[in-house]
Length: 249
Image 1 (cartoon, one colour):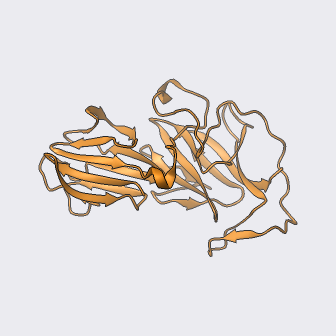
Image 2: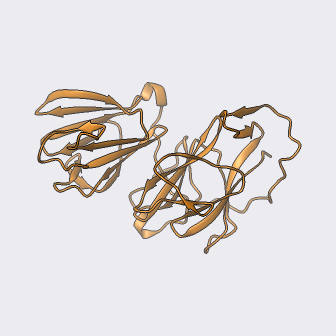
């Protein structure tokens, strides 16, 4: 499990396992990591964890947030990165034994100039929409009889089904992406980014970046992960898309 090591002047103060999707850092008592120092803003920064990836975001702090000596607003944390908050240091450690090779977030729309710096080469746990071609039409999933998994809340995904995202507005309308990997990132860095994670009991969408949250079936999401249902309509970064399930080829 990834963890953070908080230290000051070389003295380790605390070790914090990253168990939550959102870990807040700041001077106020309600933060997950409270640093009672005037150099730290009341709500200074947040770390968003999705599977084995972690995003650091500065929350418009007064004195800023630094990673390895560089000022950052948003940053994908890598193993052994050191976050600097005033005199305090927070080292990010990823458990390679548990997660294996590092994976990164990747956007799933056509490349744009503002996206430079967030995307990276595809890895085993990520999926990208860039470069994939047109796919066959939707296949009915009625009548399947293979084993299924459920989360106990009525969500059932058959083992012979796979999630698909199809863009239904904008210049990329009609493009499709099978959600084959553990994590798929959608959106435009600096504008609005969300991730869809593939879990044993279904597909979940989570807001990652941007002042406004994605819209699902006409309603704005919050910071929590939301289970996707067949034919849900997602609005993200000005693009409308449909999520649906279809049988594997």
